[in-house]
Length: 281
Image (cartoon, rainbow, N blue to C red; front, side, top):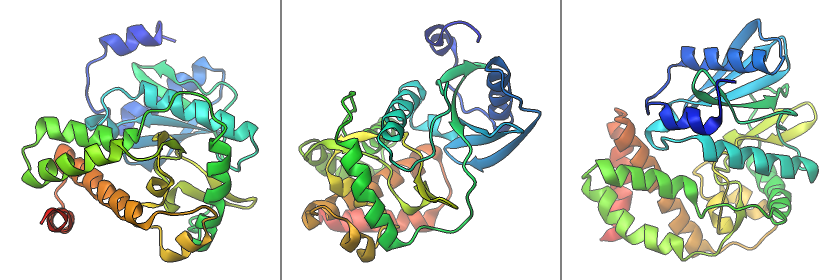
């Protein structure tokens, strides 16, 4: 499929692919893998584009906008596939990798392949989220591959620091990043929130392990979608002071994405900056 991954990644210009390019790469990858993909359907657009390769029951992930913060998606997709395979073998309910998930290179883009899971738009309840996070952490605890510390937030913040002079970003990063590097480390989902649990006829399924990392359990409880009901349902112990710091690191990560992506959301920026500035005062 277009030479070795190293060759392709080494020569490819860093840019943000369009949704159309992501679809084209998905179809090219499918055909190279012997999958029918006559009717591709875009089912999600965000940092990544996900394409259902109809009539095959397979979904691709192609990183697009996410390259603004993370220019080389390859290691992220490799870690995601490796951890998802481990969890599937451990019996964790999740959207499982296809039998040859890659990541592959197609049309110069990194493509990973996943089984399609029928699901609806229902959101997992806060209490159920807290309940299913415990077994996920237990299974992640036996993963022996290398995972970098808090790679999602620390990478995004580092990228923003290199291109933005925003005073709140620099002031908060100077405090929070060294602190984060001193926190306990154990395998985590890395981007655990209610949107990354799909509700299916068979029950809730975890998905989106691109940000797998090591860090404190509180990081997987730091999303603003996670309420007190979720915290109460979580089986493990929680350090509330560290949880507050993890939530501020999450705010800083979102602020970094706003600054790097030049997203026009002054209300969100003001809310994040006000909270982080108050922390420093």
